[in-house]
Image 1 (cartoon, rainbow, N blue to C red):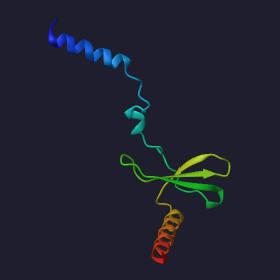
Image 2 (cartoon, rainbow, N blue to C red):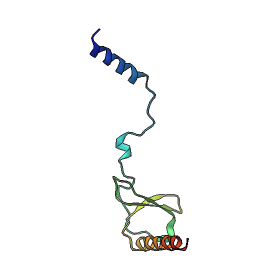
Image 3 (cartoon, rainbow, N blue to C red):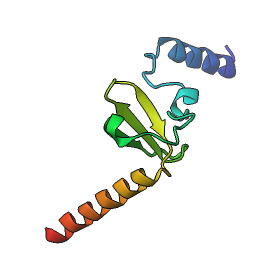
Image 4 (cartoon, rainbow, N blue to C red):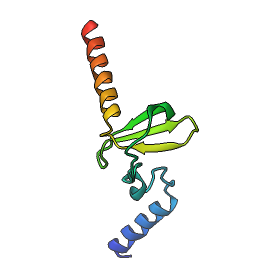
Length: 98
């Protein structure tokens, strides 16, 4: 039997009996969570904020509303910028205190 044919059969056998991968397809991994953003939303409607930063997507802010609906916020909203500045300053002060 030819060595190339034997190698091909061995490779196909390994691929056939290899356990299935648990990883997501690349197209799902690279997809950004926020495709569109809301430019104005009152803070009173928000229950919690989540921040996502991935290499392939811009900075993303997800707001979970009191109605359990999730919206993507524009990170340039003025009150959100102030919230982030305050959070960063609070973290800096706590690190300096330790």
